[in-house]
Amino acid sequence: MTTPAPDETTHAMAYTPEDLPTAASLFQPHRILLMAIFAALVLSAAWFMRWDWLPQYLPKLGWGIVVTLVMLFSTAFLGFLFAVPLGLAQVTGPWPLKALAKGFCTVIRGTPLLLQLWLLYYGLGSLFPQFPAIRSSFLWPYLRESWPYGVAALTISFAAYEGEVMRGAFAGVPAGELEAARAFGMSRWTAFRRIWLPRAIHRALPTLNGETVLQLKSTPLVATITVIDVYAVISKVRQDTFLTYEPLLLLALIYMCLTGILVILFRKLENRIPTRGA
Amino acid sequence: MADPAPFINWSLLALSPPGWGSVLLSGLFNSIQIAVGGYSLGLLLGVGGAFGKLYGGPIVKDLMECYTTIVRAVPELVLILLLYYAGTDLINQLLALGGLPSVDISGLAAGIFVIGVVQGAYSTEVLRGAIKAVPAGQIEAARAFGMSPIKVMTRITLPAMLPYAIPGLSNLWLIATKDTALLAVVGFSELTLVTRQAAGTTKAYLLFFCAAGVLYLALTLVSNFFIGIIERRARRGLVEAA
Image (cartoon, rainbow over all chains, first blue to last red; front, side, top):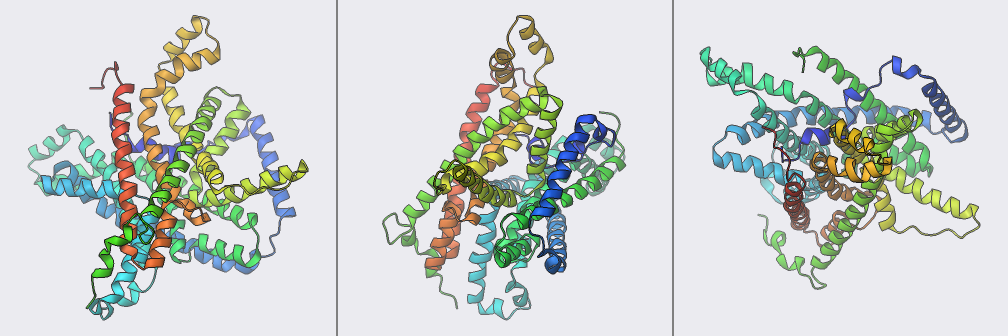
């Protein structure tokens, strides 16, 4: 209990399914009043601010949202694949692996993502061209682009945070369940595949969902290394039109909608998993 | 074949002017200043927000809910840009209304403001959870003794929730130190931005980014050391959960 619980902080930083309002709660008198005021604000923003640039950039914005979502889901998936061995190594691994996994998580979690991103893009990106072997390899056309560095940095960061979550989840699966699996004659691998991993994922699911929302909140950083996601499109709008607030407000709205959709999907997912009360 | 010498030219990190060591350290100092300022502002907002969310009227509760929802659903980078421009704009417009000349808001003040607002929403959630973990009987007992609401807060609720809040709050401190890096995007010369400038000037990208990483990591590890001490002190006398 003395170590900081990552799931609590994830919940504090990311919008989670349990925060979703119920339909009935929206129809209290004071809420209807507040919503009316809010609608008036939105309407006046739509009326008094400049939105004539919007139709022209709509296709680009659509593409930007697609890039953001691809970045989010690919790095969350890849990161999770790395997180399982990272968590497992910290729970049962021999001490060198344990120390290695723990060190990796500490270093990645202890430095800002922006710095890691720039380290990969500017650091490794400036190092690679100096090796003829890399320049002539089939990877070179990709290594000259910026998105592989974005994917790599986001994946590494997600893996480190998730590795910590999975460590707790693996350690929290009751020993009796694993003993039962062994008593049924399951091999270590079968027990892991059928009991340990699914149970750990069930336990960690709310935190995993929260971390995925946090990952969505981290994706705009890749715009700083010239990946054209929705944030980069909005930055372009700001440069072209010299507007400050309109594009940024729209961007905030887009991210709120993305988060909302993601959280509703997660609620569906969490509801599908059978749990025996408390 | 590549020449490894440029990548490990340690003299670039020297403290005296040809080296960039002092620039990096002043960047780190700026980052720490913003993290401390933003975290403290966030704590103040968080205490207010948590009490508002738990004990406020229906409208206060809903407004607090909107604040935390927006901050928890929108990327920090976007919030920082919005608050950075909106905050400085707002102050200048207020000054113009009062007939005063506009002022240049220092990057430090603006940085503390934006990090503080973001942290405020996070600590609202952490503190709300911690306050809810305080046994209701303790607060009722305080009321039964005739304490005023303020006195209940300062004597009972705040001290009693501390052991529950400290793990979350210490995580938030670590997040505040790392969030300062985002101010590089609005051009505030904190550690990440000066590192990029140093790296761009000298072309020794790997060396400088690794050096900055070591500085951030050192900050985290030193913080962890003190967090451990604070946590042990806050939990003294509590029964450990078996």
